Amino acid sequence: MKIFGHIDADCFYVSCERVRDPRLCGKPVAVLGNQGACVIARSYEIRTFGVTVGMPVWEAKKLCPEAVFIKRDFQWYALLSGAMQDVLGKFSNVIEYYSIDESFVDLGEREYLGDLNALGARMRDEVLTQTGIPVSVGLSVSRTLAKMAAKRNKPFGVTIVLEDELNDFLTDVSVSDVPGIGRRLAERLERVGVTTVKEFTACSSFLIKRLVHKPGEELWYELQGKSVLPVRGERPERKNLSRGGSLWGHHKDRKYVWAFLVRNLERVADSLWEDEMETSALLIVLISSDGRVLKSLQRLPDYTCSYSLLLQALRRGFDEIFCEGVSYCGSHLLAEDLRSLKGKQMSFFEVSSFQDEKFVRLKRLMNSKFGVFAVRSGATAYAPAVFRDEASNFEISDIKGKFCF
Amino acid sequence: MCIAIRFSRFEFQDSQLIEAGLGLSGDEVKVSFSEKNALLPVHYRGRNLLVRWGSRGEFGDGFRVKAGGEGEKRLFLPRTGFCKIESLEKGLWSWLRPQKCIILASSALVNGVWFQVRRGIEAVVVEGGNLNSGFSAGGSSSRGDLHCYILTTPSTHYFKVMTGALRMPLLLNQTV
Image 1 (cartoon, each protein chain N blue to C red):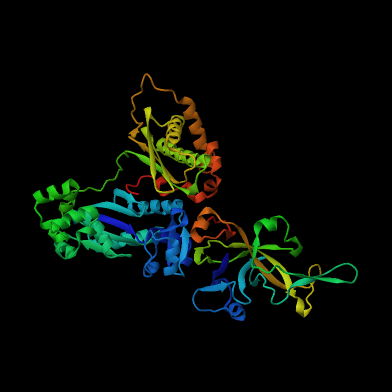
Image 2 (tube, one colour):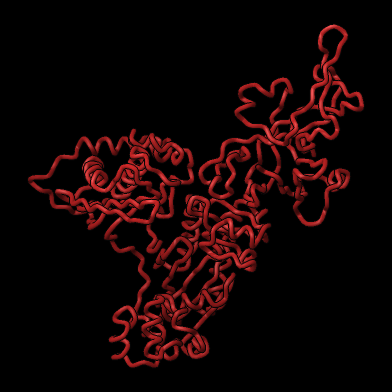
């Protein structure tokens, strides 16, 4: 019988901030994202005041006037997240970097592991000693149960759930508390009278297949202690890549909006280059201040990662959807239908991108030495504020290797 | 604007804090600009000092300078706790002979939002005594009290969204 581990950092962003500023320990602290508007992480101290994730800062400060608000710094969080992975590497060769603050590990066969409580505590303590980040550890016979176990004794807990403890562990647990069962699925199950995990696992395989299809069926097995979902050491190739977000306020100026799109395209092109991927379509999205979402899908003549070809596509799409006089607040670029450049078959009719490649190599070399966006398109000069803020040069989407956002 | 700061009490000896009338409960000390005689924790010329936060004119803060002949001119310190970095750079404060210093804050309060201060807040100290008690400085060798003015700069987009303030304190090696 295999044992799976789930390691979940406790209020990760806040813990990262406490690593470099211990004065924050024991205080109500919240990390703000979304240009400083919303809470994206909160300490256990601030939770007692009713501050929730996604709450605007102006509401949070009323609930907890003594709270300290901190600007997010994903580059720092990525560094500590990587350090956590390194520590976990001492316990297993098969680690799934699930998200910035969560990992799964395949610990191998139960009979070789000895005392599981001691192992879990060692993992937890080692991560804390090496990185300063407190984590909760769940060990169980399937990855779904391990994740639920880690969540059970937060913060800084170790929970072991073996087959003979499943009955007690799952008593009174609602299906909506199972990772992987979302609101819609929970509603569908409720319609047939299934609200608890016990009721869920008591259903017949036939009913489960009909009701919740393959992903639900996998969970059905996992919750019974039958492991069907492996720990994935390698992330599967991504299908698309997106960059974008707020335009830092509401803007009508064509040059300003274009500057943001070009900035996002540079980020897309950089990421494609780094991952050795190419795309065949670019989706350009603009969000107007009144909430309208304007889209333009630009098919490229062939798969490419060439910045200049992508720029041409962006220009066509932008001209198609941008309306003078309309105010915009957000933009997104989505490179769709990605494929790997590795082992690529050359085409007789391929457009040469040699000059482009030389330029990109030079630009990347300069930026690696002098900072991201040290060399960038002249069009971006119309949005200078975003480039002055170094923290905005590295977003959570720039963290490589993790499975989820 | 920044109306209060918090700092670690361990930056100072307890006796200094007691003498300054600051509480010793907890690890941190809070100072508000609204307090009469508010003091700021300042690192100045290699020492940690508690220095008066700006001036509100109640004590006739200022100094006398020789105004030609035998006469003396009374110059009052700016009645504020803040100094715009632009005005400092334009030289509008040069008559006060401001000296740069660092405020040893751990967090600061702007429009009801406490935000983290990692290394400190940039500020200037100027000398000025109580003119009502006949203090004379500004060119003379006598030393007066130090007054600290927090340097401010136009808010970044992030800071504006977070606090709604148009100006922010100038933070040492930190962008908010």
